[in-house]
Image (cartoon, rainbow over all chains, first blue to last red; front, side):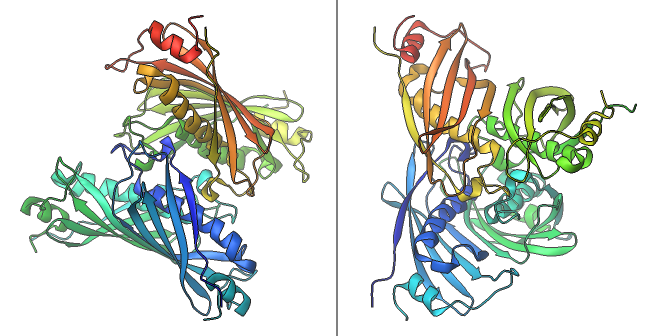
Length: 131
Length: 131
Length: 131
Length: 131
């Protein structure tokens, strides 16, 4: 049994992400989470890489990310794996402080874009163990 | 007592919203919701217009929005109003079918960007009644 | 000989398009142009619809588009058609005043994504006449 | 006389930047250029930092940036400085190959958002010399 995979990726803040309140627009937080999640799935998702859809997303905004922030860190872990879906946890940190926490439910899909069972290999890959 | 305000706004799909799966990227759903929510708050938010922040967002994705969709309809209602925050419900419809449902918690803020109580007038404006 | 096709499409301004200067970010002007250009090519591009790439874009910014603008109008015409490319002219109007003028060179591509000659039919479709 | 300032900044590619052609959408190239340009002006723009607007942008697209590219490099130099404006050159490199070259004309503005003369200090700061 190996440890559950964790990926922390820096995500760059762009001027175009800022809104008239002078901070990163709430919508962009999801793009930051996606950028790190895609890297995670690329590395730890095995055959899921090209066959997942977002079924649900949630984000708790804890702190504003100001225009002077050049990059944030997004840490990705998989909370749980179900029959056809899995839950990804995202923590966005700005200078060490938690700026947001997000949870996204991803569904495994087949060539017909319908949900399909997650294989044992994929499960182990996401969780680092068969549990 | 008047009816609770409801706003349905068309939101245009842009080519740049689409991703390699040929559908609207999940992140953009939040921009669609925001576009209609801003119009709602402009019309029914009274003095809240310039003094709200997003505290939490959730979105359930029900159907993909394909690249051939030119515009969707977003319907906004206020579910509830608390002491310093209120909950906005968003339904995104694509050709009559529900594509997504989102809930966003908005916090009223003062000039110091700290939460502040929602006034009775603002409450009535959001809900259409003092309840 | 029929008249050269012209398309004027409304393009919606989103809150997320605004930047800390309280106006539409310069990058989004290109998304506005693209939204109308895609509609134009869909209608007047014939078989070019799925086989074009952007080779060059230019935009002259004449006026800021403020956060209170709900939608702009983008007018599309084809300036000229060459052997493998054509030039699209875009005018963005905000309340009747010219906000920007853009020119984009589009290249026709084959299945190999290499430039390929524009057919006579495509030329006539874009220009409304064989000239 | 010191050398003209040059800044090369990595700019991260996000999944949401990709379009149905599986490459970075043409619009996002301008966001990449802006991200590096803002860093350049922050470092070398002196008092121009908070008082510039984009007057014109051009971009020549040389190569597609594919979805497997994680980050590109954007190199910024100032080509020339006029009375109230200056020209910024941007080169976007992807794995050492030139993906795009852009030129943007920036205008110095005063508190009234009207063009104002560029000071000698600003000129020297941008160019590294009074020339």
